Structures are given as C-alpha cells and as structure tokens.
Length: 336
Ligand code: FEH
Ligand code: ZN
Ligand code: ZN
Image (cartoon, rainbow, N blue to C red; front, side):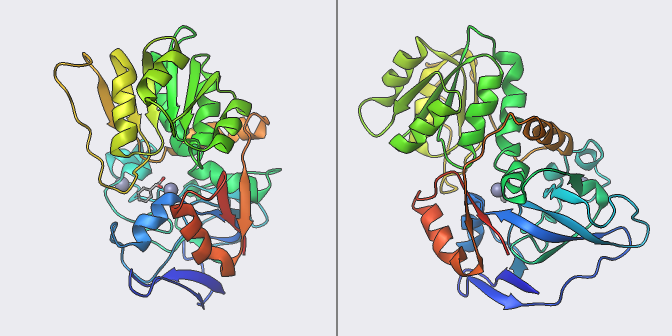
C-alpha cells in the first residue's frame, strides 16, 4: 500500500510503498477514507517533537473497517468509523478512565505508531474506533482531533460559563472553527479573535457574537470593548506569547485560560502577581473517548459545520508548508 512516511527532519516525508498491515489478535484494519493534517504534525516534521522513525503520520482518521483480528467481532468489516487516535497502554489510571490520550506511553496514531496518511491503518483495539454511519469521511476525520480538542476545552470551561459571561476564542483556524461553535453552545457571549478577515467572517457565521481583528490596534482593549467588559474564559487556539498575553489581559478575577494551540512550541505563561486575581491556567490535550462520542453525537445531529479542503499524496508536502504559513482555510484533509 502507499503511505506517507516520516524519515526524520533531514529526509522528511516520503510517499512510498509498504506492506499492507495484517491485524493481529484484538486489532482491526481500517481502510482510510480521510485523514486530517494537523498543525502538530509540523512539530514532528521539524524534529521539535522527536518520534521514532520511520513512521506513517496522520492522527485524525475516518474510514471503514475492512478486517478484524482474532477475538474482534465488533465493529464488523464494512462499518464506517472514526478512529480515536490517542492510543495508550489500556491499563493505567488515564486509560482506564477513557483518557488514553493522557497515557504516558507514546503509542498515538501517527505519532508513536503508524497513522492514517496511508491507504490502510492498523488500529490496536476496538475501543479506538467509533461507528460513524452516514458521515462523509472528509467531514468526519476532523472530528477526532480538530473538533475533539476544542470540545475538551469547552467541556472543562462549561461550569464557568453562563449567559451573562463572555468566552474569548483566539484563533479561528482548524481547531478554532470548532471552538467557536462549542463555545456558542454554552449560551455565553462569544468573542472570536483572528488576524484574517475571512476567518473572522467564518467565526461570525459559526455563532460568534462579536469578532476582533487582531491585525490592527490594541487587541486587549478591542476584546474588552467587544466583550462589554472582562471575560470569564479565554481559549487560545494559537498558543504564542502575544495571544497568551491578550488572553491574560482580558480575563476577569477568577477567570480561566485554556491553552489549546502549541504555537511554535516555545510559549511561556507569565503570571503577574499584581494583575488578575485567581486566574487559572491549563493547557488542553486532545480529548477522551467519551468526549469523542459527544462530538460525534453533535455531528450526527447536524449541529457542527466544518470547512475542509481535500489533498492527495502528491500535495502533502506543499500543504504542510501552506499550513505552516497560515494558508489553510478550515482543515486540510488527505484522501488516499
Ligand atoms: C499531537 C502530537 C503532539 C502534540 C499535540 C498533538 C495534538 O495535535 C493532538 O491533538
Ligand atoms: Zn493534532
Ligand atoms: Zn495508559
């Protein structure tokens, strides 16, 4: 089968022919329908996030079960599925509560184990595939990461958001497009921030109550004006020093900052002891299997919109370059 294999920062991504995996006992083989390209892949490709190589990239996958290993009866071959990519050991506290993405073994799909930028994907356990009948794989694949991660952030913020509160979403890219939608579902006032007018227009369409163009002016005061005051929650889908400073600057006393984006991987959160009492800050990593079930339920109910562009094997390198330059609208999705 054809697969896009990462051979390290020097050699980079190589599309090559490799044996089609055979599912062992307890495993499944999924024919890849689509696989999203994630900004995090850029950190793998640059070597900032070291991974064992060669490895097939792609951790945001939808497709169809085509073969099951011994002992696997469900889901049966022919079942359309999405793949939960945060594969873990299955036995630790994180895994046994369904938060396998927090397991400390690096066995994630497309990161420690071969992923979905290929024609077929071996999945190590049936608990990592969720039936997704009736969903187009191109629209379903982003649910497993681009939607799941913002969903986790909003899920954790939900108890701090009511109709009289404001939530600020900074960055309306592949993840932020979903973050705005989930934030709007809480009933709080949503202020979306980006430098790209097209992304601000998209945020408006997706439910933002106000948008702030961060390419001009003093961003924190523009956010406060749009919010009508200070914010209860800020979610940073970019994750660089500027965006973190904007978020910290607009949070109310007792406010909460959720850092989803990893920017260039170098951000630091500065706590100023004289400003902003009792601000809580956390990063957010991927999501749990049950949170993916919630995201799927919202998609099945037609309550989620996703903007995608599809690319093939030949376009992968150029698309990652465009992703790095901020030139991808919505989510770029690979189809074999
Ligand atoms: C993947 C690999 C490493 C860091 C972060 C990620 C996220 O994109 C997973 O959602
Ligand atoms: Zn990702
Ligand atoms: Zn584990």
